[in-house]
Image: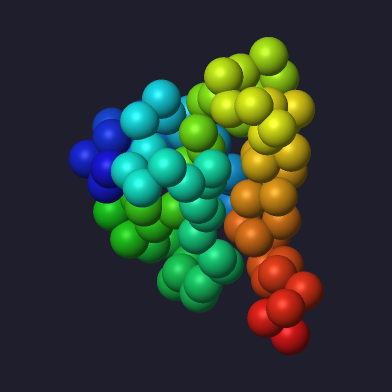
Length: 89
């Protein structure tokens, strides 16, 4: 997946990149990186894995019944912004 992100990523570490997949492993709905410190002027290779991976079936009209309203993208973007799950503190 890092090769895919390295090839498709646009912008800097301040820009959110969403990657929609039809084949996320393990049947997960999505996953996203949490914020971390990246030195100013860092080479893109240092933040190439940043962003959110979303199961394409979770988008409106998608094939993931019960989860196909787009909420997974919103949920995962929250993690990218630094919000943990409520049960994580």
